[in-house]
Amino acid sequence: MTPEPLDALAIRRQLSPATAAALNPIHIFQALDSTNRWLLEQGKGGDVCLAETQTAGRGRYGKSWQSPAGNIYCSVRWHFEVIPPHFGCLSLVVGVALARALEQAGLQGHGLKWPNDLWHQDRKLGGILIQTAEVLSQVVIGFGLNVNIDPQNGDPIDQPWCQLSDLLVSLPDRNHLLGLVLEQLIPALQRFPAFSMPDFLPEWERRDVLSGRHIRVLSGHKTLTGVAMGLDDRGCLRLRDPSGCEHAFSSADVSIKL
Image (cartoon, rainbow, N blue to C red; front, side, top):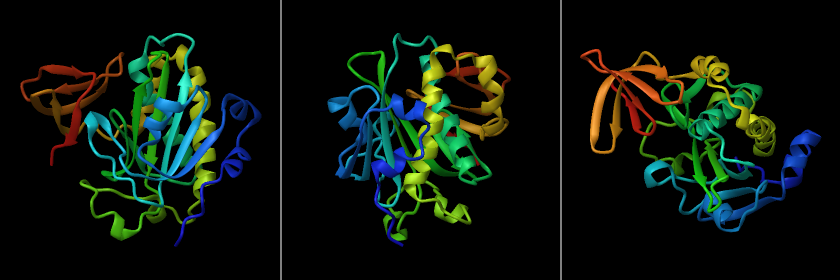
């Protein structure tokens, strides 16, 4: 099934007046090397960039982000008046916003894998990449969602994955999905300077797919295994190793130990 084309007007029709007013143009490209890169180089605060495909998408640690047609590849450039004190928690807040939007679309059973992935039954459904612009108070928030991939185009993806077309009885079109996401994401960004971990933590914990599970953590050149113990008050991942010692990671590559 050929996906409907991305349409800026169709997306804007779904936004509340407050959300629409916070956004500048929605730029749509048939193909782009990276929506994040385009906004870093040419975007302004409030700009949104979408692409039908990406030729050089990137995930964390410079990993390739496979970007076949039929999905959502979106980046938003956002300006904070000052750098928020809990800046390291921004990807967690974005993840919750995306999860809420997918719930509104009818999805159930999905969750968040620290620090930046959406999962459904141990398969990747989407990812988040946040990059700072030259002005440190400005960030580009990129996210990708697997919506409806041609099976032939899914072969190069190097991990178990899933897509919304297989998970939803009635699949909304991508413009509708983007409207739902932006309606959750923009207010979350507006509230972020007043972020409170005690207030946020219960909502994260309900969606945490790692908590209580045996995991492997690669941080720099060091690999540790143990049980995931949720987040600390800085948003770091807590791990209890086999000896009972607890470690906290602000950035790491995490996999579930089978």
